[in-house]
Amino acid sequence: MAKKELLNKKSMDFLEKYLNNASPTGYEWEGQKIWMDYLKPYADEFITDTYGTAVAVINPKAEFKVVIEGHADEISWYVNYISDNGLLYVVRNGGSDHQIAPSKVVNIHTKDGIVKGVFGWPAIHTRNKSKEDAPKPDNICIDIGAKDKAEVEEMGVHVGCVITYPDEFHILNKDKFVCRALDNRMGGFMIAEVARLLKENKKELPFGLYITNSVQEEIGLRGAQMITETIKPNVAIVTDVTHDTTTPMIDQKKQGHAEIGKGPVVAYAPAVQQKLRDLITDTADKNKIPFQRAALSRATGTDTDAFAYSNGGVASALISLPLRYMHTTVEMVHKDDVENVIKLIYETLLKIKDGETFSYFE
Image (cartoon, rainbow, N blue to C red):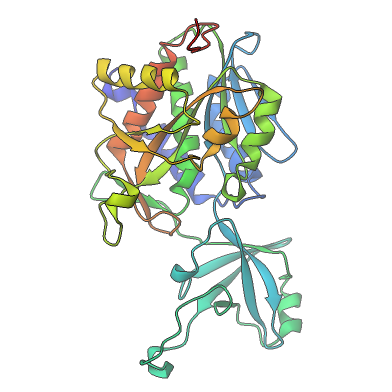
């Protein structure tokens, strides 16, 4: 496959627009509109559901159905309590990291638009250096410049308003993509690029392809659980992020070894159907696509689990994008890995046969 086919200017413009848009869990629809608009030239039809999962379908009349999937939501906060002096206390919406919150600027989403705020933190001069309190969910708070609770409410902020970080996309050293919410907006981007390549290369698939951007993964795989019952797929290839374990304070004996720039990470886990996984690794070898391996105990913790254990069992596999600094506002991935995940999914799809069950008993 020619290098020029991957990550062209249109692709990068889409990626930047898609990443910079906020899509907190439960509020993904604006991001889904951007995603579907990009996919219009490459899909035959779209499916959406009540909670916002979006599916671009190629060859929808085919009986045999293959899913490629990422998830659309990002971690965030909710306003949980407003103090009498106008400070906002929060509760997580997904796995938001309280330790990175102090001194961060935030966007509070209200009915009338964005209200800006900051996670304040006591100055170093005022803290007890022999017994410093660490940031915790119950001691971090947001200041929106209001003098009291009444003024907060006048500004349109109330309990239940969702809160996101405004940090936007940029590139470090030409090939490191950095942004909040690369987990897992990158997945939605990569599967969209697979659809683009199939169309531009005029590939005809012998099955229906369901390019699925699920919602609510961050709070328990909920969007995937719903949409798999709608699609009823025969095969699912899920892409998510996984930890680069080469940065400080990560124990590789526990977390394994994965590194950005070294290729996609193929998962070994009970939910991963072994024949499908072997097809993926064989495809990588034959196409000289570098890849890494990861062993996952019990559950994968990704939408793979939701697809695998649905509908009486769906042959499922997980291809992960190595990422540094997960669930922070400076998540980082390598451009080469992004391209290689796209290539690996694309080439694997070309190897799947109509009606293939991956059964061990055939």
